[in-house]
Amino acid sequence: EGGLGFDYKWDLGWMHDMLEYLAREPIHRKWHQNDLTFRSTYSASERFVQPLSHDEVVHGKGSLVNKMAGDEWQRRANLRLLFGNQYTTPGIPLLFMGGELAMSEEWSHDRELPWYLLDYEVHSSLRDWVRELNRLLRSLPSLADDPSIGSNFEWIDCADTTNSVLVWARRSADPADTLVVTANFTPTVHEGYRIGLPEAGRWHLLANSDAHHWGGSGLPIPEVIESVPQPHGHWQQSGVVTLAPLGLMVLSRRGGTR
Image (cartoon, rainbow, N blue to C red):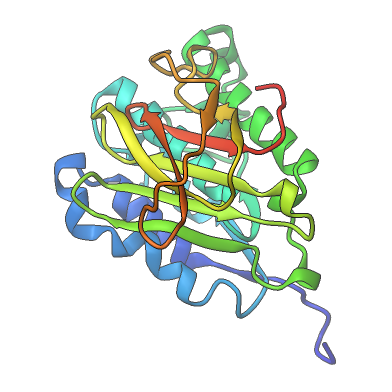
């Protein structure tokens, strides 16, 4: 306000921290969880763009998917996690062209994008995951960048470094719009994993990055989570979920399509 008219700042710290973290083998990630949580100390102080920019996929830096740790499947799962985090934490997501294709070659201004990759399900499914994240961003008020309600982000659990799991809430002016997001940053499946819940009631699965149609393992995930009055952390309500390998889930009090 009263400045040059630039409303948003590029959050390069988020980009570098996330890419550095996801380049680590999962067994080492528990020592670096602060790379994922540090941003929350400043994310509400200004308005940010969360970029995955041109600078990271040129001049010998490689493509986004090739920055990820693990085998071929795990690299794509990590990329889905990256995009899921980008879209469900505060800020405006910016994805440079071609990142959604999971292309292995570095971007070049001398040639067009390798659109032929979309003939292969391992690439088109990841593009479809980004399409789904864009749909959620447009349709869910809690994911909107709305300065009128102040900070609409809250950690539910950011301390489970042993399992490299994070859980957070996104809110809007209407409490019924509250979302809960879980992210499992290892390929270990966690069944019967208890999380705190902001409100009592039924929580519906809105999105699951590990679903088979996004290129995931297709591990069966309950469609509905029932809260119980069992305290967990500083939350009075909690529920039991299944965490898919290298998977991100979005839960909502409102039902919806995935």
